[in-house]
Length: 197
Image (cartoon, rainbow, N blue to C red; front, side):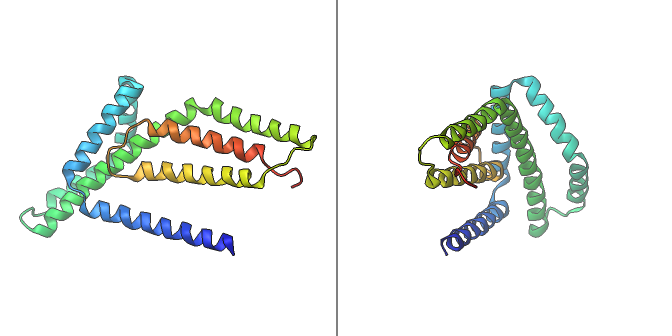
């Protein structure tokens, strides 16, 4: 019964998040999307350098090239004196900006995960060896800590997805914090597996 309630809350939060993202996409002004785009690129240059930024821009433009060309063709066909067509033009532009922001954030997350892969592996292996040591002793394996590790992992992954999709400028320091929380969750999960599975 408790698991059903948790699943219902998770479903509710997912639907609420989807509705909030759709509402943000429908209402966000292009100036805010442009400011977010510029902030993301500036933060990427500050954290990773100009060469990494240029590589991410090249990858993003390669991914968005055909879509951008189709959107430009659509926007050229619209009559911008009509309010509905002006709104469609703005939403197309905002969609391209937000997709570009998503791609930049995905590459930023990928860079941080690659840089922190030794930490993630070390946390998991250390947790496994702590579990193996505890298997031979009379130490209590806490199922609550195991569940806390599982939930922390899920919350960290949800935070990463929210960070990827939020249409506002968020400090880049969020990315390594999320990766550190994932490492802690992996350690908790592997260190507190039950002795008999």
